[in-house]
Amino acid sequence: MAGQVDHPAPAFPERVVLFGSEGGFSRPVLVRLLAHRVAVAAVVMPGVAATEKADAGFPIAVQQATNKNSLTGLAAAHDVPVLRTQNIHDPHLLNELSVLAADVLLVACFPLKLPRAIWHKPRQACWNLHPSLLPKYRGPAPLFWQLRHQERDTGVSLHEVTDQLDAGNIVAQQARPLPANTSAAELDEWVADIGVGLFLEAMQQCRRDCLTTRSQDEAAASYFPYPDKGE
Image (cartoon, rainbow, N blue to C red; front, side):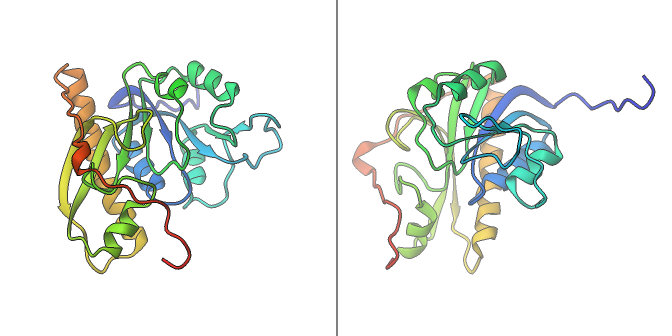
């Protein structure tokens, strides 16, 4: 057909749904997934979609974001649907995830705990990227606490999502020294670069049916909450 643009087949044909947010390392993760031609079927974010066509009960939209430096703007530029919900337990979301038929759900800086009904959805796995060497520094702000405690030896973990936050089996892990004198944005890029590398290697192992995981050592676990204003 005249004028039709042929898009190359994705290098990683497994359908991936990314759970993220506008803050943190979600956008750098999506940048790298797209650069590696991963078939990103959708991005799920908390909140209400800024679109007139959004359904009041469960807004779903390809957001026409004017800020190309945002997660929604990047998704829109690549025709990746953005699903937004204020209720992670909403049956509409479960239905949409069923329709998307994702092979893998990848969580990267998503602020809501996924219920079992969601992390059981994908055909292969539901994994979370966490910027610490788990089981150390579980919780919602691991980079803050590691910097506050002046940690030097850290890294990034890719782990299975379970009922307990940050406690699932380790899929892949890489130790790295925490970069010094870097901005928050540079740290987000650092996490995304390591994390997506771990994700891509884990996907290759899934294809070869040789992926192995290991349980976390609960005796060595530590958890830190959101910091308060004083901290």
